[in-house]
Length: 380
Image (cartoon, rainbow, N blue to C red; front, side, top):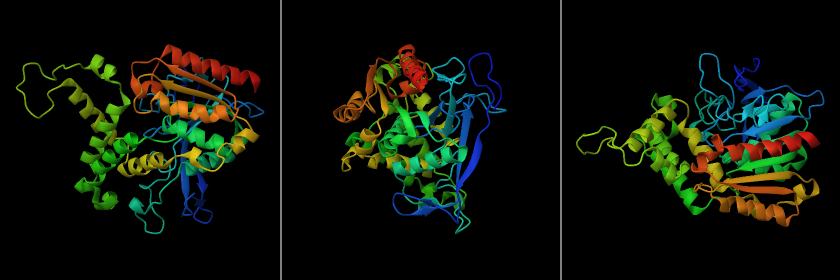
């Protein structure tokens, strides 16, 4: 990692890879299946305190990766949470040491269904075992052990990242002092499962999916994956945001009506779908989205027993125009946490941008995060 630059970014960063499990000592999954070897991609920002007490762990959303801040050599595109991470920013790298990793099942440096199966020499494809939220946490904990970090000041994530933080805080509360859960859910609604089901069907029904063996066949389900991304992107934005950005504007003024890209919003969605093909794998989309469908931690017997015995301080945030993971999802988490008598702060933030708000610059959102993180840093 390089020195921070003057605009508040952490500057040039490098993604690192750690082998956390081997073929001889594989990762045991919640299902009972095993996977090995398991490599994990991660980045770090800031300086680790001598007593290792200043660590913040970032858990990413469905299509995120380890590259949360700064930029890579030859590519000035910032990390997906660059507006939050850096010197003087809410996650201040002058004070905190931040770890961001790509989750198990991903396709950006961490072992997943697109990785080589050592038993066959080809990509796992659909032979990769189904995953559970607990498996993500197991790998996060293994990375911390690899880095020699015994305890987190804060675990923090949005959307699927927030779900990972919730699972982690409930099962291993002694790992952290604080948990920040943003625009997330403890149990998807039928509507949410339906959106993901349609996205997955678009992928699997693409002829080039080839039963998940598209890598071996030299094909890729580009049409299905781009459609899945287009539909998902609609759910990440509010109607007001789409209206303000595009309205009913024509893509080409005066063009004859047809079934092509006639409206500006159609062009935008088409672009989002095409760009997605450059950075994400269809199998990872299937596997990671399915984990979200089955996540329901409060349905377990006595789900808060461990965290009640070893309390974690929570910050729960939602956005008023987020209809994918509405405030009702966060209130459900809040109700469980409050009934258990755990310390918790909840805020519903006003934002016109829908679910995507957790990724964007918003003064109230950033101020709320900064205040909580600063307070956590003062009492560590």
